[in-house]
Amino acid sequence: MKNLMDYTMPMLEDYLVTLGEKKFKGTQIYEWLYQKREYNFANFSNVGKNVLAHLQNDFSLDFIKIVKVLEGPLVKKFLFQLADGEKVEAVLMQHDYGLSVCVSSQVGCNMTCAFCESGRLKKKRDLATYEMVQQILLIEEYVQARIARVVIMGIGEPFDNYDNVINFVKIINHPKGLAIGSRHITISTCGIIPKIKEFSDLDWQVNLAISLHAPNNELRNYLMPVNKVYNLDSLLDTIKAYIKKTNRRVTIEYVMLNMVNDKEEDAEELARILQGMNVYVNLIPYNETANIGFKRSSKERIDKFFNILKKHKINVTIRKEFGGNIKAACGQLRSESD
Ligand code: SAH
Image (cartoon, rainbow, N blue to C red; front, side):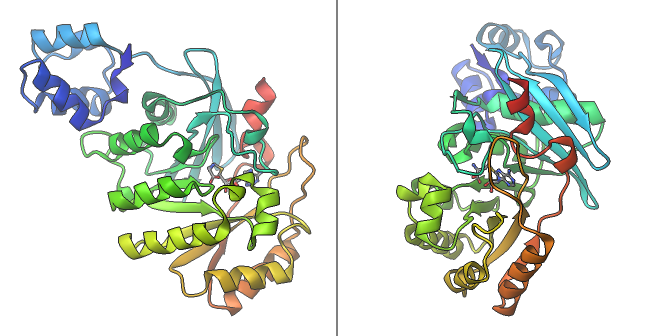
């Protein structure tokens, strides 16, 4: 059975029309779900008997469950259990501008990036749209506060679960849904080119982040096997086309791995390939994990890398760290709970 939170507004309106009902009832249903947070169909008092009977028959409103919360000063990490027993995680971060949540899009991941904990656990399945929506609903309920920003950077490759992720964005972005503005939503991908193109065609204001992590094919092939399918040159062309089409600045993520991709010549090469593009580079201090041998670059090496990019007039920031000491980093909580 479908979960009602899998449905975007147009899907819900189409459904209502097939019942011989008016489209505006879609708005009423969204108000129950996402504003009043009422999850018992029987209490949808204004939708009418016909709609109610069909909703009860056609949809469930089952919830995923929070099974563990780790709390740090500015960060909370949530482990969720899904209906089939699988687990995923999400991270809540307190910024000066408000709360942001990093959500997971798959159970495991097939991209097998060499440094990433999530990829050690092969993808078991995609998350359904409702399983992503509910990560946010449950966190909002837990902290009794509104989430201002969402990044799809948890476990999984969002563009390997494209349709469900796009529907998720439609629901959280909808004014009668969670009303999170497009510019406050970010999708991060390891570079699945056909899906980046499809996403460009939507011409949305949603932010796109690309996990680049290497300035040439040799190094990128080693760190990110996806590069053997979608290589760096085609990826850069695709990003350029995206920027041209949407006029949006793209975030380039670059995880800093000691003595692997953090050399001065890597910074020079990165500056060269990004020259003239409307991008900003986010240098990510690597979160070391017991299971993988990579080490985090020292503060000095990160600063040096940063300064080389600056010198070449590349916009660059160093990612603020939240979760390191509570295992908030990248798949570690789920990995330990198995
Ligand atoms: N699959 C998507 C989104 C999930 S990963 C993607 O590749 O973008 C989110 C980001 O965290 C990616 O840039 C990923 O490379 C990075 N990452 C993975 N493991 C990490 C670790 N241990 N420390 C720091 N960043 C990590």
